[in-house]
Picture 1 (cartoon, rainbow, N blue to C red):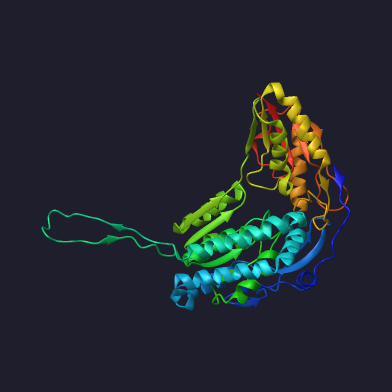
Picture 2 (tube, rainbow, N blue to C red):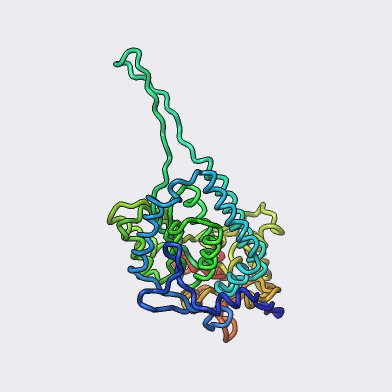
Length: 416
């Protein structure tokens, strides 16, 4: 591993945004928490406080749901044509694109991801998603169904299906792709004509709040999108359990997903869950190793391993096991680790002190059970939440590191 060295200056608009306490968006207005409480968000590259954010709880969630219900049932959103909805979503995409550098820096500062990745992936993909969903607004169609009823001679019947928006949607997003996750949740719901209460992850709320400003600028009616930052155990639980929310969409850990499902089940609301994974990569003897080895390394080290689909288990045919492991380890050694705002950084810090301790705990568990680190295995540096890119061997199926999602730059290699 090598460290990066060319940090870029912070954009003036980003400085201004993080320098002022951030409020929540409810019913088209930017509000402080009724309690007056705020919570800090941290720069994971330094561990220092980045911004202060209004701390929403059940009271703010209730107010936001009321605003969303009002917008869904009686506001101008209810009367817009599908084409008009699509144009608003497209306008939002244009606005995000015009603020690309600003969003890329917010993603890097708040999440820790490399600025180079945010510039070419996170922000452009969010723009593309909104444009794609803008097109879907006019393509939500039903079906006509031919029917025959023999006991009514000569009668004709016309049966059809009509797709309608579900209603008020509660959306709870994680911290690994803050802007993209917001876009993935908001885009389809807006295209369908739903109204939304969005709760961003408490670790990374800034991109969603800046997006909320652009939603207002784009001209979405008040209450269509409401954004309530806060902690999962308070704001998140209140949103999942709220009786006037028609659907909950959640992306996050399996453990929290179970809690969300339990809270949502009390009034049988619709639920969509995208939870954790323990994805394997399998390399056979007939594979093109020049392509496979970089692919395996990218699968686990991209985004610091903080992906639901990260290739955290590596199964390699015995005859090429040593060669593949050595190749992946060599790639890991070449990764430039550093602050996300450094232009040459390829892998940034983990998102938080809690996440760093979680990953280091898994490493300690695996090594104590007999696993060996071919490369990495430790905390990196004294400042920030860095962990070395790690390749483990001598792992067995019974080990905790093979059974549970680590959500960090750690791959467990096993021969077969």
